[in-house]
Length: 68
Ligand SMILES: [Zn+2]
Image 1: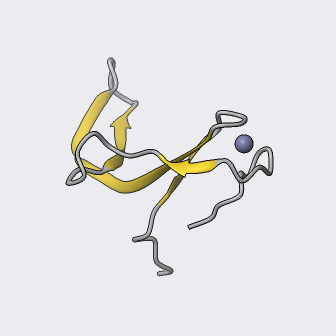
Image 2: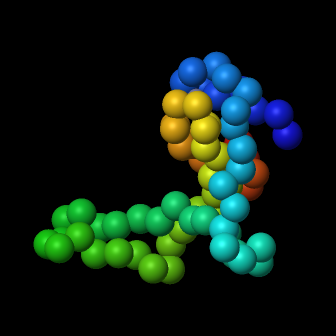
Image 3: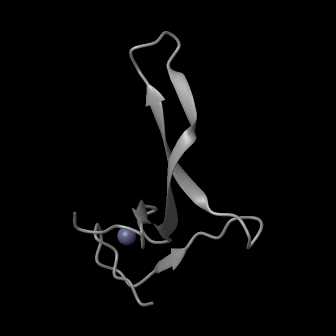
């Protein structure tokens, strides 16, 4: 997949791989009404992480996103 950087426009974007191919990055939630904020370990959205080697921007992509 050839992705252009949304921030600087360069073609220097690549997927940031996890240390193990069987694992995934995940976007988690925290309950900020608690002090300290409570991490919700059972809630998360698997995401792919991409980074631009030119401007160092990092962004996420989620293939499981659907319209309701
Ligand atoms: Zn960039």
